[in-house]
Figure (tube, rainbow, N blue to C red):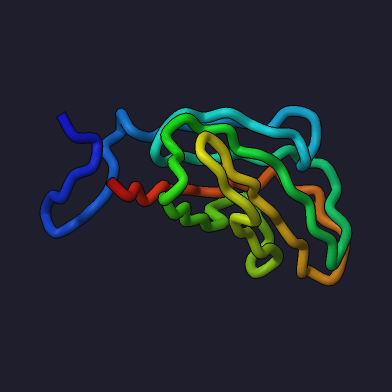
Length: 119
C-alpha cells in the first residue's frame, strides 16, 4: 500500500507515514525520524537575534533527488523565525533556523516537514 494519497481533493501522506521527534540538548542537537513527514519539536535553548543555528535530521526515507519542505508550525512568536534546508544527502538533511525577532528567544517551537520523493 502507498503512504501517499489523494483523497477528497487533498494530496498528502497517511498517518502511518508521519511521526514526531523532540530535540533534546539544544537547538543544534540532531534528531532522527525515519518518516516521509513529521513534526520536530525544538529544544527551548536561547537563540540570539540575527543568529542561525543548524541541526541534522537523520531520515532513511530521504534520497538524493528528493525535496524537503518545511514550515514553522506552532509555539513560535509569529514572524520570528526563518527555517530552511541548508544541505541534503541520502539519509539526512541539515535544517537551519534564523531568529529575526529583534531579541533573544527561548522557544520550544515546532517545525513541520514533508519529503517530496522523486521516484
